[in-house]
Image (cartoon, rainbow, N blue to C red; front, side, top):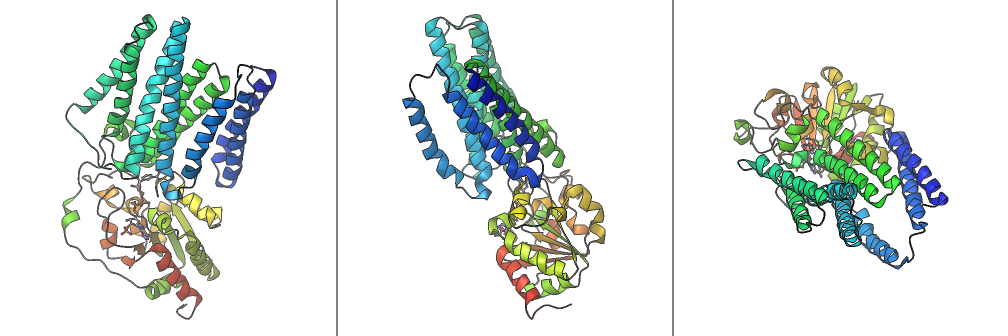
Length: 461
Ligand code: NAP
């Protein structure tokens, strides 16, 4: 490695670490993205300066192909980012698997396959291949191309872990005797099948956490790839990726009050909840005029956004509503659930896009003790994250998941288009409660109507 490359790698590693640090606050998140992109540009630039590279033709072709695939992928709507992330992880895993495979056959041919090299190649290929099919499965479940329900059968975990164990034993055998080359493709196939089996029994509602776990597997396979390629920056970046993915998974498990093993092996979403789901119950619906009157007569309003706000792209209308209410001296807060929407930070990104002041955003643990004193809880396209059965119904698949206690407010206004369930596929008692009024319709249109009432002749105070 040349001195220039070493220096670029050092700056790049520092930029990656700063990016992770800055990513933890909404007001520094943009700087974090610039820092990470800059770090990656320096890393690629430094690698291209490697003296071993004698021809740039293939690198150019690969970069052009990558750009052709990557550019359209970067244009997906925000709501499709989780499945896009699953696909990126699949590609990352595939790259690690392919590099490991190429290096195995190259080193085997040249008689340079030491035990250490074989061990890291085996680790890289197993992790890379399982991340590849695992990422594809997770993307498929999130895009609902394959069933979001957990697919389970008897002895599932035994079958899955026998496959992984066999791949690991074959890997160890190759470390002992690398010339048993028939075992190498078997390891690849076993790891690819394990990736599918790993995700199959996990329900759609747990996919965000799984994506984050896959992120950490992809990081670990990059670490192994770094050892294989003797690239220290890849080892550092992979370790940062692996560790941050793992920490995020733990934070998400905590937010859902679930253990890691329950998320990975609990087949969450398989059981259909309470008998109430099939009962005919009535709801009270309201109009934009009623909602405007209720809101203007309130002293405190807590807005609880969910996936529906993202679908409707209602964030700018929500900002107009916030302005109208604040103008009247009403205390308006936004309660953001850690897994509202379809990816970590989904609601924060949308609210930031609409320039909602950060100090108006409150976390679940801080807002819940205040909910019994709140005049109006305005639920905008949120469902699972405000479902009281998580607190009260031990048979519910989301039992134990912490929720925002919207039901404890004096009045609840809930905006959604129909009585369809949310991501977990279960009914929500909140909509049938005595203190709840439903505002049926697309969130953007409904809030637009309420804002019209507030800004025009329909407003009362
Ligand atoms: P949710 O439970 O999925 O409910 C969203 C609600 O929005 C639906 O009931 C839907 O009802 C309504 N909706 C959809 N489009 C709408 C529109 N245009 N206008 C108005 N309403 C609309 O969402 P959530 O409460 O945010 O909960 C998130 C769920 O997703 C959790 O189960 C979580 O575990 C899971 N998840 C989270 C992440 C993450 O990282 N944040 C990632 C993947 C999955 P209608 O169809 O009747 O309108």
